[in-house]
Image 1: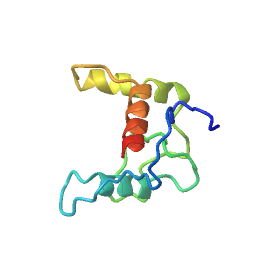
Image 2 (image 1 turned 90 degrees about the vertical axis):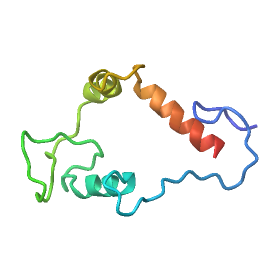
Image 3 (image 1 turned 45 degrees about the vertical axis):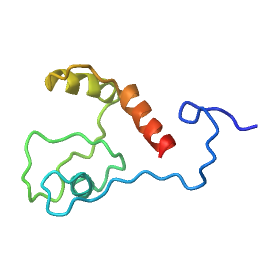
Length: 108
C-alpha cells in the first residue's frame, strides 16, 4: 500500500500527470519570461533559489542578488506580508500557496 503524504492524499489512476505554464510571447507579464530572467540574475556563487537583494542594482547587472540566501524567517512571513501590502481580501499563507499548487498538480 502506498504511503499518504501531504501532497498525495488519494489514489489517482492518471499515468501522465503534468501541469504547464504556457509561455505568452510578446507579453510583458509572461510568467515564463519573468522566471527565466529571475534565474539568469541569481548570484552564481549562491546555490539557493531565494537570494538577498542588494540595496541597489541596475537592470543590465549580471546579478541582482547578494551571495547570501534569504533567511528562514523572511521566507516564513513572505506571503503574509505580501497579502497585507497588496491589500488582498484574504491573507494567504505559505502553506495555502503550497496546498493550492499541490491540488492543481494532483487534479491536472
